[in-house]
Length: 200
Image 1: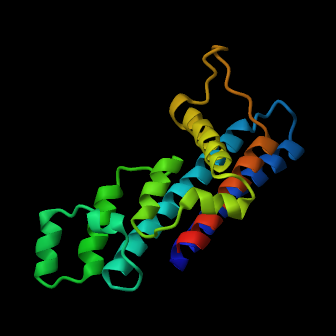
Image 2 (image 1 turned 135 degrees about the vertical axis):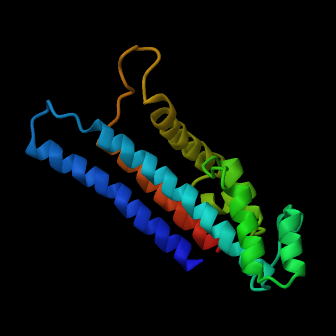
Image 3 (image 1 turned 90 degrees about the vertical axis):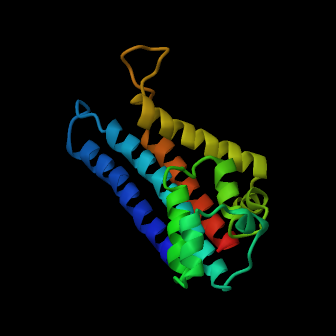
């Protein structure tokens, strides 16, 4: 599991680097240079880092559970495997191959950004009450934690899927600021670290 959080931290460091680059460009140039797309990219990459963390934690956790190295959850037992994986298991293939490949294939098209989908994924490897426990770590209620994450992901989706265009003001993007992005990235970091601490 340590490799998953280390990769997240590296991914987030790279995202934060875009914010530092935006700040440096603003200092070194005139206001005519628009750095807002660097901030937008920073937010997209930060949410992506959280998504990738959940994918890796679940993949590693499922393999560890199959090896008997962590408790198996109800959701783990209900995880559907393709016949090819079952045949591989029956033929003596190592579980990190057949279950690992099955988890990667099943989750390859899914994103783990929405609080509900993140909780569903974590249930495969842990019986924790995820958002209640994350809320305690952050000093927030479970509901407030989920709402703040949804708002952050919603903004990411506007950037990634709608070019951050404001439909109420045609031809203009939604406003973005360094402080808005910093707050969002810091929140994602706290959420990810809490999830890792609770469910590792």
